[in-house]
Each structure stands twice: as structure tokens, then as C-alpha cells.
Length: 190
Figure 1 (cartoon, rainbow, N blue to C red):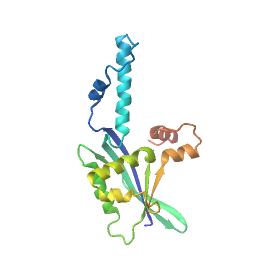
Figure 2 (cartoon, rainbow, N blue to C red):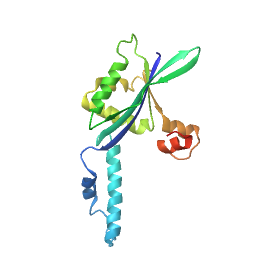
Figure 3 (cartoon, rainbow, N blue to C red):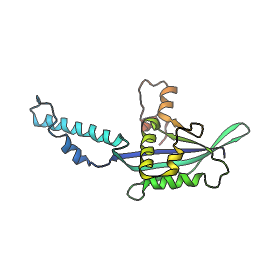
Figure 4 (cartoon, one colour):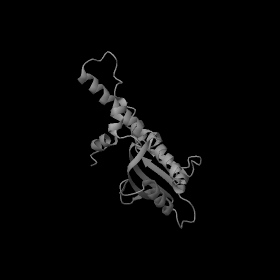
């Protein structure tokens, strides 16, 4: 095995606030020229959704609710690259301490190997979301294997493959981001 490929996707929620807390937090913030109660309520709900989304996307204000992952290995045979993908697994925060479990998994990947393989992290929008969230959570929880795997100070040992960036560059989309489920439907992937 020359290389490991770690595919993952994180789903997050705000760390300390429920949606009801955020709705309450956003109340009274409608523009002063709004008089219609329905218009005010719609404005406040829209604003609460924006606040909820921003908290969910902030590495220091979010909680990892779900992590789906699969580990693959890359071998080179006769000059061609072969990827063998493992089973896709799901970690849920109601059943797992997600960061500790990922740390244990990552630690076990390289155990017993004579040399550390190159690790490629693959996710959709990894550079702007998944990697910063996972790294912040790993540092906070003291997860040494995750921190080591994501040590971007050594780019020859770890690299990121952002499927969102690849799609945007190679498929000539003018949008800055394409949702993974939209791409999947387009490609006929369930």
C-alpha cells in the first residue's frame, strides 16, 4: 500500500444553541419600517435560519452530529493506479464520541506499517468546511492521530482533494459551489 484515501463528510449543528434559541435570539431584529406581524415573523424566521446556518458552519461554534467515512488504499501495479474502497460507515453523536472514534480509526490505519503512507483526505468542500471543523475538534478533544493526519505543515505527507473545487474547475460550472447531492443526481449516483 502506497497511499491511503480517507473519504468523509461531516454534518454539524450549532454547539450551544437550539433552533428555538436562535429564533428567540433573532426576535426584535426586523427593520423598524416593518409593521405587518406576518412580515415581521417571516423576516425573523429567515434571519434565524441564517444565524443557525452560520453557527453550524463555524468550527468553534458547531458540534459534529454525524460523520460518514470510508477508507481506501491505493496501490500502483504496472504503472496504473488502483483504489480499493472499504465499507462506508456512519458515526452518530448519539452513539459515538465522533472525534475520539475517528482518532482511534486513524491511529489504527498506520499501525504496524514500516513507513507512514501518504494520506489523501477527500470530501466535498473540504478546504472551506470539513477540514477546519475536523481539525478544530481534534485539537479541542486532544485527538493526536487526527491532528497528525491533518498536519498541513507537511504537504508531502497529507493532501486534500476537494470534490467541489474539482467539479467547478473541470466541469466549467460558473457557480462558486455545487451541492454534492445535485452533482450526484446529475451523475446518476444515488
